Picture 1: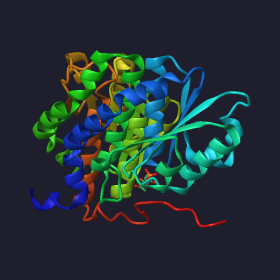
Picture 2: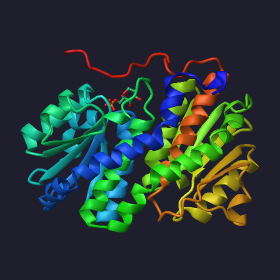
Picture 3: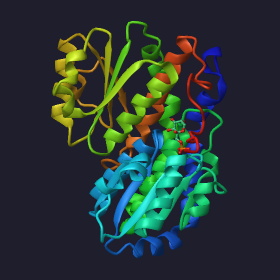
Picture 4: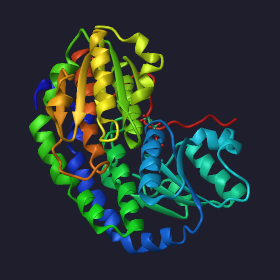
Length: 356
Ligand code: F1P
């Protein structure tokens, strides 16, 4: 480990394959219970919720859940369920509220669960890294992945581990053993890819010309783009943005300059459209990082940098493999700028609201 690679954050990013293996073991043990728990879903609508990183996790999980199970699902910030639930809840509907919280102590998430349970009779499932947290105590069931807990303020392995657990629940609901097995293969694929490519983004992170970062993704990858944006903000205090891929042209593209890096979390459904966006932003002076499952000549044409996963997994299954690299991009930029990513300014490991 070079001097650049000290601290909790780096080791927690590197530890993700092991945390994913632990996640698989935890969910495996609960498989039969979860089959029954989700079987009772009947006509419940699913709301995923969390704060910050855990909200972006909710966005990705909701898109995966609805697209795979054909059940209505949406991701909303916990605070909206507390302050303005009428924009989310339809009276007379039954709800399953699925919350994500590394700490299980975030005030808005606890308040959201309490409100939906008490006022709307929702069933509540929590994914957390602390089995004994206040959130775990008030939910009907909790999937706790202690190994994904972190000492660092910024969430890295907790994010991908809870996303993996949520995807395993989708495979359980579908009874899709192939999907389940593909998810179970992520630890060794992640280990291989990380060891092969973990230094690749170091050069980009240390490029002083880059002062503006844009992350693009569609479908479940939009939540990943948002989380990648947040990592860049939290660890380096740099202007960073996230958009649905094609949304970027509708205004925000005006901010592109030679100091911009546009990172595209490529998806099959976005393919040629995303390729064209990278071509446009390069014409405006930006540099581009294409993160892709399978590189082709056509896709490579507009990318200054490329991370190819070659996971051979079905579409949308391996998206979380992009995350260690966008986490490392922020990490290396922080260290290059003399910032300690373990102790980012203005942030705390848990956000608790003052008693009002
Ligand atoms: C989530 C959170 C993160 C934020 C920071 C503090 O808390 O707010 O989104 O990036 O790490 O914690 P949790 O509810 O997942 O514990």
